[in-house]
Length: 378
Image 1 (tube, rainbow, N blue to C red):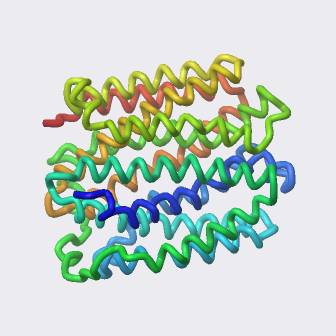
Image 2 (spheres, helix red, strand yellow):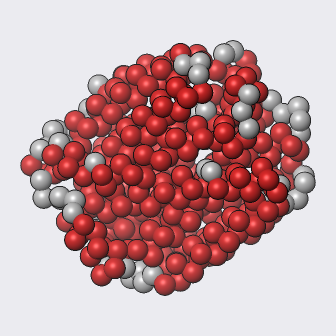
Image 3 (tube, one colour):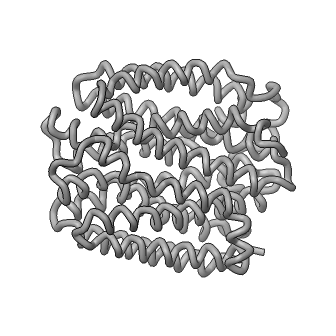
């Protein structure tokens, strides 16, 4: 498999994560302008992630009836429309509605991308293809935040979202491959298949682990701007955005996940090591030093995306003919963790402070580690 074969799919993933995460560096600004608390502002992420965990399965009929190519194009166009709406809205409730609508579209887009990516790769290149997909999502999360922060400081944040809308429309016209309606009919989503995958094939532990993984990650990324502002009250939008630079190490660990797995003694052992390092990085953030926070985020992101890459590749390897269902389940559990992580730890942070917030994340990491210890990966 050559990377050029899936390049349009990777670009679509990057733009999707622009939509999802670009508002985060603007949270302190939006909090002040709209008179919101930290938790209320964090709902702008929660509103998008809520349908992200519900939709992959509840949209089962839609995903089975239409080709992923067609669904991908439609979701890109509608995301462009809602992104423009986000700029024009001046009411918090309306912003939440728009973000919720984006959350309905993103799982359709991402499930289509994952399905098309694994189809293009074939059985022999799934690991490499899924690593490339995860890398694209990392780049989208990083540069979406960086660019929106840059526009907020040096121009107007709204201009970035107008530009993003245009890029989404252009991407909807890109060549994703030949329309293939027959290929989607053999992967119907039903509850019996879900039960088999979760319990008989042992994927339930993997999905619980990735749910904990993203619970932690979502919490950390969502409330990081407020932590930075606590440690440095003069932090600008671009300064806050640069705190997400740890994503760069995530790019490295994602791309090298296959090699790192071999060095770690296999997928299972590497997942365990990754979760342990993840936990240590969380603990490092208790120090009231912005330099230590910056360093810890590199370790944090590197460990997170290593685990994410290996887990995503493995579930596609064992999916067999139910690849679309497995990807839908993966996204469902992944974003369920994101929904809970974008709200619950924030309440702890608001009421009790950062150290107790960290304790909650470490407990979630312990659950994820125990889940990893129970799975069996060949």
